[in-house]
Length: 479
Image (cartoon, rainbow, N blue to C red; front, side, top):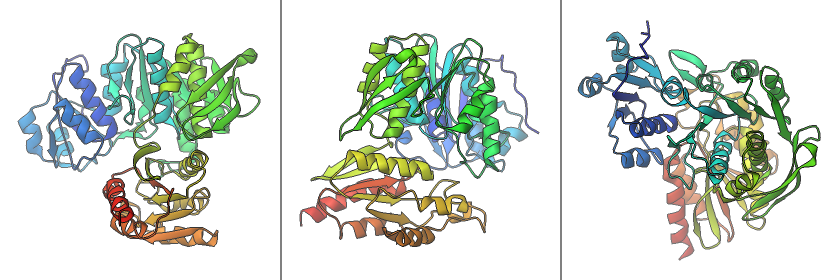
């Protein structure tokens, strides 16, 4: 049975179990900034979080062993949601009645309880929207704290304690831990919030869309009367969740009924511009460096929230204009001549489709070559097998990797990369099945064209394919 801890006791030595996760690494950094002694363990670590932790001087213990805890002697253990109940260190913590918390519980307790958290939630766009909001606030002279599930290009890390009343938080709907099977954002004490979108995802923890909607409904109900909920009216389920809010609801979207709307949207190779039409016909010219309709909507939500908070709109627009986005979100990793290699975190069918469509608008001349790795707990499952076949319409050529660790999905409910390739071919697409990154790189370096835009779609390191592809293209181009 899990032990309840006395949260009035000040903790000095904090140990994070699963420290290399994006959120957990951010929490480790925040705790260290606050003056705690921080350590932790993980099964492995890869960019960008390994570099973040190394720069902070936080030691990562590789592998899970009870001896790690005996050596560190923590006052508090924070257990990440990647950790299972049978993890050796988790079992040691519980059996020895050591104080522990989940990651979101620790965030709420240590960093959000005395702030006014601005929480960005939604199935899609959370990380980018949080980064745009942070940039807008800073351009207005604010110094908010922040915890973002990615690394803003201009920050080199996704967290900071900040100063003042605001704290920008990416509100993840994924569950908190094996001992708290509720969404993380329910611990984040929102003062105001943005909900960007809402559809089925995380098939490993949610049985249905109704289960996800229930979490968002509860999240909306947490907002205080003096706060505001900014909701995307293009999504019926978002609007349904908004009815649970006890505060004013400000809507945004492409439809004519939204309080804030987009007009004259244009996407170029370097910028996306549009007019933000607000209540009473107020108009602001918005320019961002991120391509696509979905990113324009992300920026519009920030305009709507900042306007409601009473921030200077000139500063808000400056912050949006200067924001360079997030690493692993349409991030250019390198160029070889006029060929480009782009890294993107997209893995949900809608995110894959919108990312490729945005890049098609941005790069109008070269071929869009998609390289897809179905690696998440949901994409390993068959739930979106048919939907993925409709996600690559903007790509000229598609490489699909074999599902890594397929046994992480239940037998009989496993995604088939081979089936996706056949479905894409039936739609007239040039699609190729590959066993691994090495085979993909080998095939591409034998068959590429000037101006190709290679888009790597994965939520993991993908066997360092980005660097391997850049090196392979350089060698091939120089022959």
